[in-house]
Length: 202
Ligand SMILES: Cc1cc2nc3c(=O)[nH]c(=O)nc-3n(C[C@H](O)[C@H](O)[C@H](O)COP(=O)(O)O)c2cc1C
Image 1 (cartoon, rainbow, N blue to C red):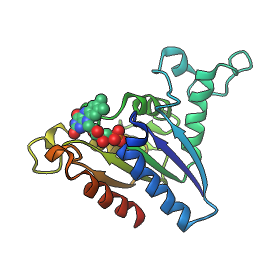
Image 2 (cartoon, rainbow, N blue to C red):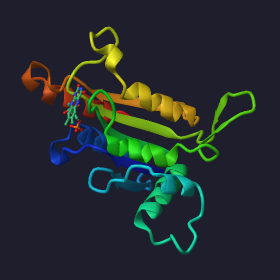
Image 3 (cartoon, rainbow, N blue to C red):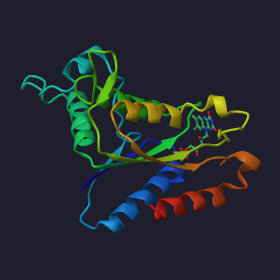
Image 4 (cartoon, helix red, strand yellow):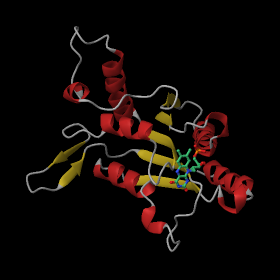
């Protein structure tokens, strides 16, 4: 079994999503010591914004003249690792109501028509990345749960569920550490400990 562990927080050691994603990966390793884990840190090793040249190579074998270009190699690697993974654990901070742009750049490499989804003749969409398990380790400063005043501004989990759902992934677990900045951060330790506990029960 292969697990792809992705982090995207820019906050390094003080990142909440990194803490929770690490707990989730530790739990999967505990359950399956032979698990093959690949790690991708999109903050320290970012993919550039998708441009038309990178787009033209997505899903294709790089020819020898471009095969040493680091940005194209990284694109190809992102797609290969995504396709190969049975489990993905993704650390997802909320930045400005959505996901970090580093994570969006990764999604732009893996959500490719004809590779991970396809448009059918009737206009419907068929996911081509079925059978994966995805855990989203989500962190946010505020509260965006159902019924909260800011619920309509939540474009982090809803967006990622749409992205992976369109690629055919149905097994998506969300572990939320939210409200980290409410009450001046007084509840942070408890919220994080609850989230880590959920990760430890996966
Ligand atoms: C650039 C930036 C933008 C943020 N935007 C939001 C936001 O829109 N809503 C929110 O609730 N928290 C926001 N926060 C707070 C983060 O969601 C919070 O610090 C969370 O812990 C981030 O995850 P991380 O610790 O893994 O980086 C923002 C933080 C940063 C650094």
